[in-house]
Image (cartoon, rainbow, N blue to C red; front, side, top):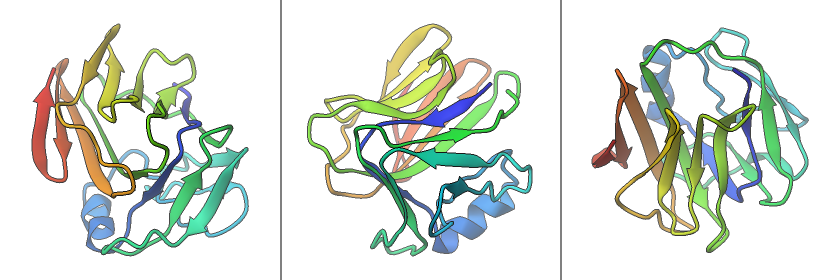
Length: 172
């Protein structure tokens, strides 16, 4: 499955204690956007699922979040990161992002496979949408523009749960 992050104007970051927690979970792939400059996006998991930034992506942005680290700013026009293939792990999957939407009323893809049949996106109503098993599934609460949110989607045996800033935010 090819994976890409596309034209949604958001900043993404992960640092500080979250970095230690995620690393301890031994993820299959983990893009911290901490590369600072250039087009290379390094996979911090050790599995070499590296990517390449293209279009309007500004790496190494100071995200001004309490956890520290760096962020990448996507311009909402053509900014994207094309990532190497990450093998599907059956019906169990967790996707975790820390994002700050910056374009009111815009919608776009946060993470997607090559053909878009499996994707995580932000709707114009600022809810997280997961396209999975041929259907769209929406989180309950809208994200706030210009504010950082930790979003986690956990899918196990075909059922999913949204989490926003540590609290359950709907199921599917």
